[in-house]
Length: 472
Image 1: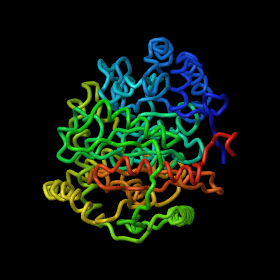
Image 2 (image 1 turned 180 degrees about the vertical axis):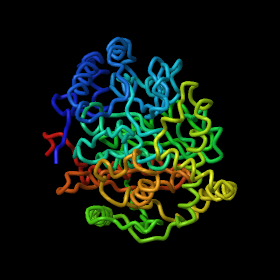
Image 3 (image 1 turned 90 degrees about the vertical axis):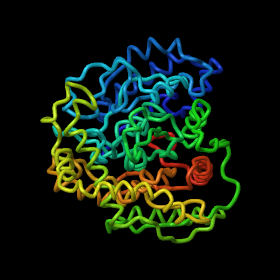
């Protein structure tokens, strides 16, 4: 059981808000912050394998030019390697794009993060197109969980989460298409919010999807960093369909009605550590004055069938039209067995897609009705602790690995389909494996702010686990 971290200097122990404050008050320069982060990533990435593309020299060049008044001024970060950054290749974690050239433009969501004052150090790793929830690759290599290097950091934002949890950077870009922000947040002891659909800048490619299930976001070590990012994003872009985020500077100050749900639609059983932390979280909520009660959610076998069919449709599009969707350098023969298997799954089951899309679209209203007068739903983020590397390898046959994926993830995809906000918080730790345990809180459409304020309260009541040895 070996851990790896870069909490070796004072800057590594600061969150993004504290780092930006030092920059704004001129107690430190962005160049000093970036230089220290580069030293940290060089020291720990050989063990983590979390960086897809380095951009250290440009980061040092840009540091003196950063807007020192930005809300995240001088904060180093990484962009997930499924999102374009001008001058860097976007390889999406796949050998099929190994020959792709540098991107000519920076994606709007990444540029917005840079406009907040952050400085990109490069691209973080993800599994092939984010199709499975473990950052493992066809050649047998993997990104490692910094808490226990033998285990997965989750996915698809596994590289981002590993770098943040290890103390390299305090905040990193993430994306969530079926739990791909919340799952690695749970695996690495981080905060990961999947926002309400429409909360952030729209993805230019999202208009092609009949149901938008992929959401940008960030992973952080503190709730206030996640809140600061969303507050800054809310200033820069606001959907006319959503109310403003509202203040997220203070914890929730009223009791909430919290529904609890543990029955996975696949029949997966919670392991002992996850069940223990779930029960402890209920006790904490009740101790803080919240009313907690078990509920039933509209998530059943049909939802699982529909989500897999829709997911496999997206995979089929990549498998058969990757050259048009991404780059002419795309080589489908280099895709992993899992990707080919999912594409074949859709080819054999495509006739049901119209009904699937109809039901997934209807899940928004169905979930709101099920929530009723509840404020929040509590579930585990995943059903079990992060598995050992190899268990979810993309090099395994589709028939072997995909049932394991479905058995593990359990809960997150519902919020991708219905578009409601959902956040994973590191509410516990398993001493035997030295792995964090995440719990997931989901709210009504637009209630991102309420979830963040509840998260502030929970973090204050029970500080989150950390790899920083000074906090042990």
